[in-house]
Image (cartoon, rainbow, N blue to C red; front, side, top):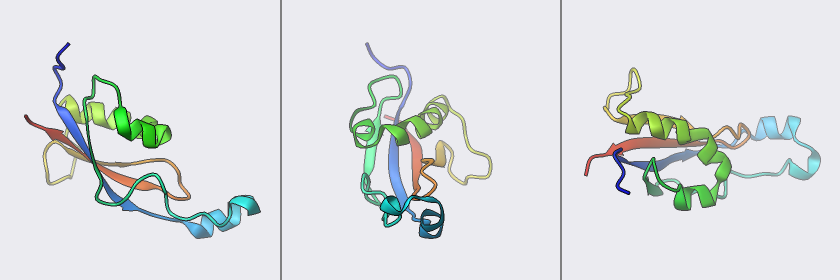
Length: 109
């Protein structure tokens, strides 16, 4: 079956770390965490919004769950208010101790 929605590209823009929050709220055994080790800044993934999530999902199912709604919104033509580039949305995972910021773009093929 051929997808009717355009593919989307996910780019890892930034990995962040809130070690002050981790130090205050995480149990001691988790307190020495670093930035996310599942993704690297600059990595790109192309996904079919109607297909299997593939490598991105394999890397982090939690991040996929967090941003999959944004991928669908972009694929269906939504634009984020205030963003300079049409067909682009900035989103992130909800690991608030070490969140990753992603750019999602429609890929017109």
